Image 1: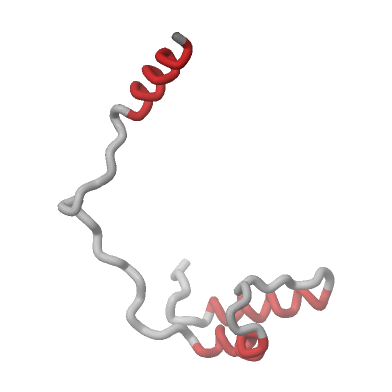
Image 2: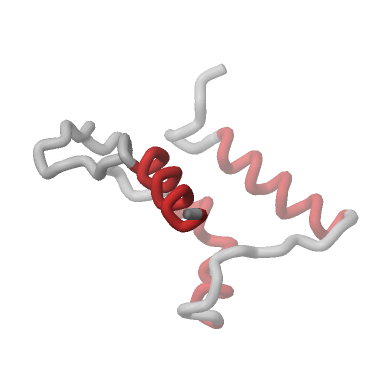
Length: 86
């Protein structure tokens, strides 16, 4: 009896869920067509070459050694063509 009850509960929970079909309406991508700003990529090119297929995360140290790269990235982002006008 407990198996039947568990089956009925699972059936009730999953009964309304379906996967979208092939005719599901999709919105077009809003990704920019232009290549990214090379000034934003430049600080990471050496690390990318050295660590090819490894993770793309970069940990910044604390203190001034971590603050300066963050400020440079913020400044470069404010002057890029993708910056939000605020």
